[in-house]
Each structure stands twice: as C-alpha cells, then as structure tokens.
Amino acid sequence: ALLITTKCINCDMCEPECPNQAISLGDAIYEIDVDRCTECVGHYDVPTCQSVCPIDNTIITDPQHPESREALWEKFVVLHP
Ligand code: SF4
Ligand code: SF4
Image (cartoon, rainbow, N blue to C red; front, side, top):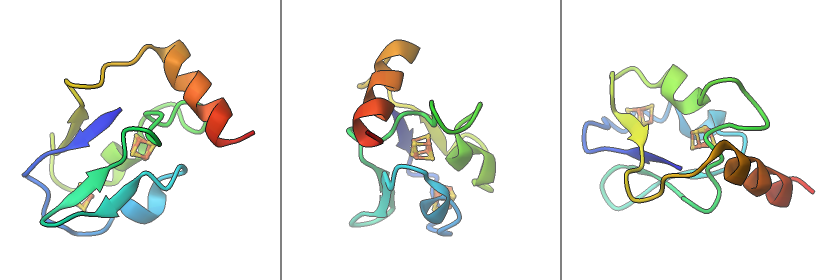
C-alpha cells in the first residue's frame, strides 16, 4: 500500500482519481486505507494518486505495509469480484 505523508496540502486531487476508493480526508490530511490500496495494480501501470499529486514525494510506499505484486493483485481481485 502507499502512504500519504505530512507534505500533503489537502488539494483533493488524488481522492476522486483512486479506482479503489482508498483515499479519504483524515483528521488533518488525506489518508490511504491500506486494505483498499492495490498501488493501482489491476487498473493502471503506475499509482495514479502519485501521478496527480502536485507535491513531489508526498505519496510514498508505506514502509509498514510492503506488498508483493502478487499480493496486490489478490487484493484487486477481492475488491473487484
Ligand atoms: Fe488508490 Fe492507486 Fe493511490 Fe492506492 S495507489 S491509493 S489504489 S490511487
Ligand atoms: Fe495531498 Fe497530494 Fe492528495 Fe493533494 S494530491 S490531497 S497534496 S496527497
């Protein structure tokens, strides 16, 4: 899964673009639901939230939730039966 860091400026560019509805506004900044983020596997070649975010290096791979491409694909299949 990916992680939104405190560099987020709450611009709301990423939230509507996520194909898994994994992004929402948290208490202070936007957050990614690790159970719904497939790193865009199954939808796009690259994570679309990273592509649309205007601030470089704001959305990063979550060091607490490293996942293989196979695991991300399995998550996609569960989310989109
Ligand atoms: Fe959503 Fe893709 Fe970003 Fe994960 S990487 S939060 S699935 S847009
Ligand atoms: Fe925050 Fe980037 Fe999403 Fe904008 S696009 S809300 S700066 S993470």
